[in-house]
Image (tube, rainbow, N blue to C red; front, side, top):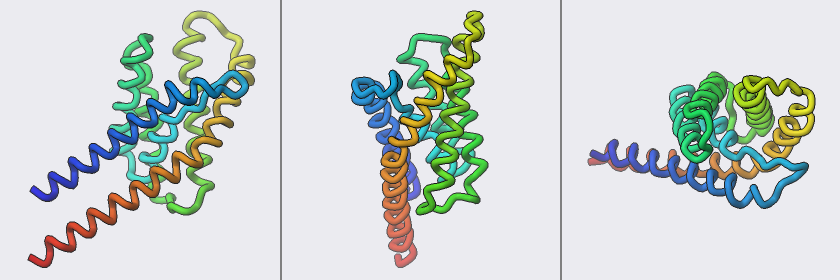
Length: 181
């Protein structure tokens, strides 16, 4: 029963992180555009959990983040779920190279993930409609979004890292208590 409670607690914390970041991305940051773009806070969430926890977490969190965006975007349903799942999977491949305090790998992975996201959304939303001005889209939307996302991701990454460390300490403390009975 205790394992189930810990698992449920972990799911609720991740769901709360996704919800808060979704609200930040769709309400707060939509008012604070830089160079005409907003940061992709949810890419930070999927990437961070992917390389912190592995492929399984990356895929699952990517799927749920993508479904949430699919529901509220009203576009091609399932597109964001698929893109975010692959991004979570790719970040999960770097779990063994992840060290919490080193900021280089997370920033490289988050920036690359946002670049992949931008190219994938361009291909699915614009190239299909025969709008082929990729250089304009790259220079005016994708790259400014990557830069803005990287600036914001420093704070999001550290918040998720500290939250994850706190949850792991609680789990360890709970498992230590169980061993004494």
